[in-house]
Length: 456
Image 1 (tube, helix red, strand yellow):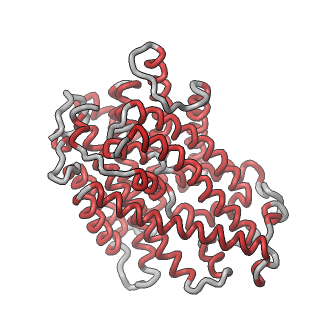
Image 2 (cartoon, rainbow, N blue to C red):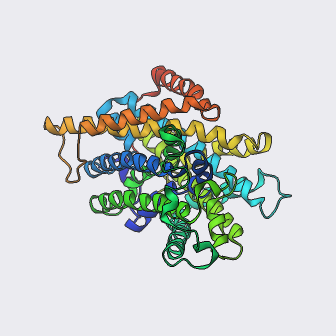
Image 3 (tube, one colour):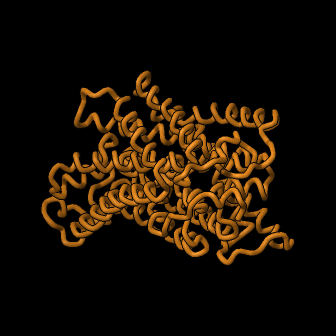
């Protein structure tokens, strides 16, 4: 382990890391965004999640192998630097920082929108401001505080999903009440077929599926602060894949078995609809609380990850030296300060363009996700070459199928990127991406790359 990484305290346990990754991934995309996705693809949406899940499986196994080789806070940016070159590391680190800043803005926006469910007179920008200040303060205290906060945030979401799966399964099997009279797994293929809009409908969901899975790679950012990383990180990597597939695919199967997909409104959370039909009082209020918690959880992860990424960039000489320091609580306070300050732009956007801010920032942030996942697969190829040449040690935790699988996953990610061009709402990401990568190239070649510094 490098000297620079040793100043971060290893206080994140296995339960923290498992729930941090879940918390960063299970968000408003499942609780709210799934309604529109079901409307667009019908039960075929499940196929999109399976295909995306297979790609995620190999991405996470590749990342797990790299993490076992070298568990550092910079994670994929560090691996890109080592196995793809310093420019790739520079672009990856800053793009991941940019992606999480935008994601945090989107989640703050969601908080503002859904607090108004109870308090419609509150301006949309105020709840995001309060949430950002509170989460900023929690991240400055200690990494264990962040871990505990994220653990409980994620647990609320998991309990909600498991309640829906268990309650829905009971209705389907035992046909309880009026709701159970028509509940059946046959609903998945008897209302226009499993693919009512053909394969095109499935392909159009891949953008949403990819965004829904984004955040799973957050395990990599926790590596520099994980207790016993050689044991914890492989276990967390394997566990997170199957749990996410269970939560996403399991919940959607139950929802569309309980209610024919064409009877679900694209404007109403399917969770609210199902809980109301199950006879749960105040279902809309409960899901509203869960959605706000989910958004706060994702924003919390964003503050954590952006602070660590700036720290790692500075330690490698690819960011301002001030970010290479840690506070007396062993957290990268300078990076947290700056990242949170930039997130205030999201509060401002909620003031000036409240109706457009969410779709703008989520579309652009997806570019950072696709780049990060792609660079993980390419860096893994470089790592395997280094192992075969005897330059680095082989990790005990290995991804199956390399190198063929690496290129198949990269091709899939490029295909998803191309699909962004088909809809006006997501096309904005393709306009912003060249500008962002161009700015990074200019910044790098004007001298952003300097000598690595020692963390303080």
